[in-house]
Length: 574
Image (cartoon, rainbow, N blue to C red; front, top):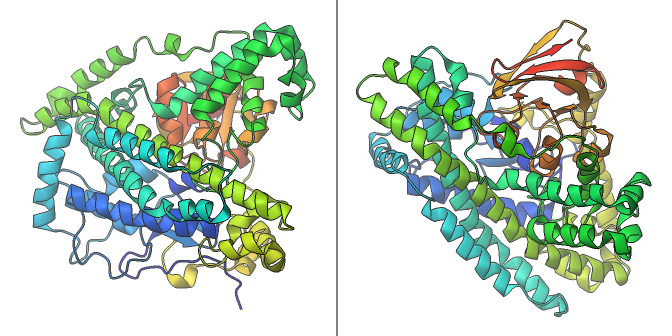
C-alpha cells in the first residue's frame, strides 16, 4: 500500500494534465498543512475569481471547490496545464501553445487536444474587451494599487507579538480571505502579461525571427523581483569598504551577525543591512511557504549572497549593462512590423508599449503577496516558539505540519500531546524532500506514494556529463553572450562558493536566488519559460540567460568553462 503525503489533491478527469513547471519556482519544497489550508486553498479561489474577472472562466468549468488549478500531488505543488491552456483557447489571437511558451516552456508536455466545451464565444467576446483594454494600458495597473491598500490593512491589523495565544491564532486564521484577494490581483497581472507577451511572440513568428522576443521583452526597469539585487549590492559595498567587516566575512558566515554587532567599524554595514532586511526581509527560499526561512528570520541566507558580491573586483551596478535596451526593443519592433497585417500591427504596437507596465505589475503584485505573508509568518513563529518553550518541538518550522485549525490550537495549548504526530510527519516529509517528484501527472493513478518515488529515485540514472565541445540547447531567456566558469548551485544558501564572473547553473530560481544573479556573468536553469523568474530578473540585470536546459545541473560539470548564448538558447562547453 502506498504511503501518501498528509495533503493530497484529486486529479480532475476533465483537466488531468499537471506539471511541476513554473510552480517549482513558487513551491520548490514539500507543502505543509499550514500553507495548504491557509494559503493554497484560498489562492485557488482567488485565481478562479481573477479568471472570472478577465472573462476566462465558464460557470461549468469546475465541479468542485477543491484546488484543481493548484494541485498537490506526491507532496509537491503542481500547476494544471489542461486548464491553463484554456486561456489560449478562449483568448482572441492566442493559443494553447502560446500559453505553454509563456508559462512553462520546458518538459515537452503532451500537445493540446481540443474538446467540446473548451471554446466559448461568450468568453472570447468578454476576453476581447479585456485584452483591448489591457493593450491600451499606459500606466500602473489599478490592481497593483489595490494590492498595496490590502497589504497596508493587513499590516495594521497585526496584533502585538506579546498578545495572548488566542489573539494570535485568530489573526492567523483570518489570513485566507486576505491572500485570496491579493492572489486574485497577482493572477490578473500574470495572465495579462502572458497575453501581451503572446502578442509580441506571435509578431516575431510572423517575421520568422522568434529569437527577437528576448529584445522585445527586455528590461523594463523598476521591477520588484530585481530590486533585491541592487539593494543588497549596496550592503556588499559597505562590507567591502570596511576592512574589519571584510575580515569578519573571511571567518565564515556562521556567527557573522554576532561578530559585527558591536563592532564600531561595522556601524555603516549594520545600518545598511538593517535597512535591507526591513525592506526585503520578507523574501527567501520557498517564500510562499508560511514556515519558510527568509532574509529576516535567517539572515545567514543574505550574508552568503553579500559575501559573493563584496568579492567582486568590478562594479556590479546593472545600469551599465542596460544602456541600449530600449534601442534594441525598438530595432526588434521595426524588423517585425513589416510582416504584420493591418489588423495585427496596431495590437503589436500597443503590446510593445504595454508590456513594461504589465511586467512591473506582475512582479509587483507577486511581491505584495509575499509581503502579506510577513506579519502572518511572524505570528506563526511566535506561536511555535511559545509551544517550544512549553515542551513542543524545538524545530519551529515543523509545527506547520499540523492542521492550522484542527490541530495547531491544541498543540499551542498542550504541545507534548502532539510531539509523536509531528515527529512522524517530519520523518515522512524528509523522505518526500529527498526524492524528485514526477514532472507531469495526468491521472489519479499516477499520483505516487513515497515508496514509488523512492524506487524511481533509486532506479534513475544520472544524466551523462557533457564534454568539451558539446552544446546543450534550451530556450532563449535574455539576449547576449558570456563565458565563465560554471558554478552548479542547488540551494541559494550555498552561494558562498560562487565567484564574481561565474555562470550560475541552477535547477530553477525564485527571488531568494536573485542576489546571486548580480555577480554572475550568465544564468542557466534546468526549467523555465518567457515569464519565469530567471528570465525576468536576468533581463532587468542585463545578464545572458538560457532556460529549459534539461538536466543542466547534472550534465554541466561544476567548474567547467562554458559559453552561454542567451539569444540562441545554447550553452557550450569550451
